Length: 332
Image (cartoon, rainbow, N blue to C red):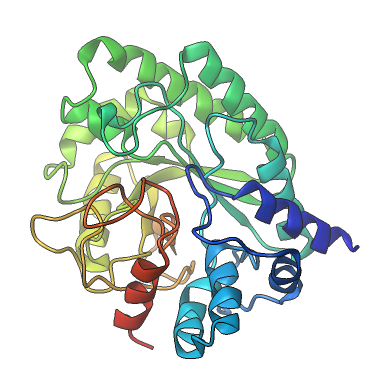
């Protein structure tokens, strides 16, 4: 077995993402087939594509079942790079090392999300996180160690700062959270080729970006490569870019990245959790046409549920029919 094939088989076995489990059983032959395929990201994208992703596995299953048209549509997801969300409740080392090893073999950058801050998501759909500050420090340390000297980009703790600003996270946790985020930035940045973007919510959430400035600074954004926007949300590229440029100006020109995974048709008013009728957005690229906007990324893995709403499974679990809808509704 080649190193690449072995690495991808390990990734498939680990499930890749926080809370993610395949909705179907995929036999060894199909996993090996997925692992042996050469992914073909767009020329403008330097990011690694996981050929054993849930979307790739679903394609294999649907082909065996005769759903060839649906399988072909799902290639719109399987052929694009998407971030991995290593599970917080287990050691992230195997998942991170396997992905960075494969990405390095292809001379590409691996994308990750670190999502394990204590008191995560205010007890909502993605509640959980590390049990306490020391547990988080240990987890982020293992995460960083596993990155080694590989080219990597990490989106740090979606929602964590925005939940400080909107008051959802109780005040007694704010200081600790900002300290942990700053420590996480410093630890991740010790890796020589890792870029870190601290999450800053989305334009429909904290509508006045100046309210984010001081919390972001207290959380160490000035030591990060920038901030991230629109993670797991549906705001348009145009709206998010304008918002990001405003926040960047307030932060002295700090750069940012945008999650464009599911924003092809923009938001559905009044719905953020598995809204129907949405579409895939701009494929991942660093060719943004805006100096301060470093990349459009697929941070949320298209087809993974936002939570138990609109008939969806638990947050982070693969939902093939929703994935198919995103692909079917997208252009190209």
